[in-house]
Length: 246
Image (cartoon, rainbow, N blue to C red; front, side, top):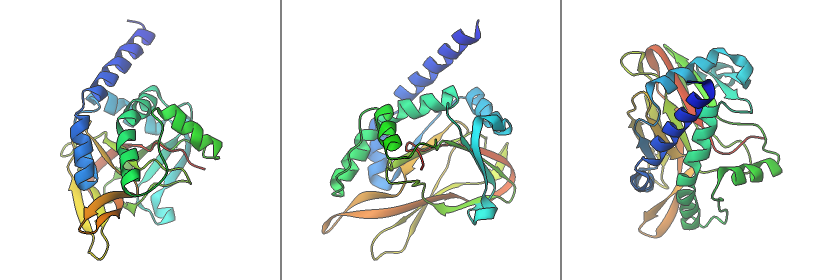
């Protein structure tokens, strides 16, 4: 089979895997707790192929060593345009399932911004505002590394949901390194969630805030995400941010 035919076959299989996810259940989980798991979004071969890109720096626009900036310990690289085909397809194909949730959340929180149906149209909005640098990133952690709690904003135009895909197998490739979310509600202490993932699973989560219904109506809840300390081995993650950076 030619390389072109193999690529088309693989893209079709991934697109079908995305379409088969329980998006109604995903929306319900996002509403309930600000995150949702997409099980088996990537297969093992896709995970290994994406993780292997880390050592080919010509495909990236920059490298960040977290300790230099107080972000934690470990490092990551931002992909350059054009994105690798699998990463580009993920960004393009997942966005339409999340845009209705994003629009509903903004309406509930009294935010006027609405998001178009396609990712290309949203990227055009970002680029017209000067946010032209791609934000999908590949993260690598070794034993002792961690990622401090943070938010991935990057500019004026922010899509309120993002995705992280675990490319390594817990218990085999690494131990520790759990994905962590914290939620700060008004006049309450922060609540933490640890989201268990297996290789190929993805977690969708709020970038910044989400609506929560209280006794006096809807209020905005602030969220941050990070990664606990890796105890052993090596952990790779693909981060999918839908807005570009300035």
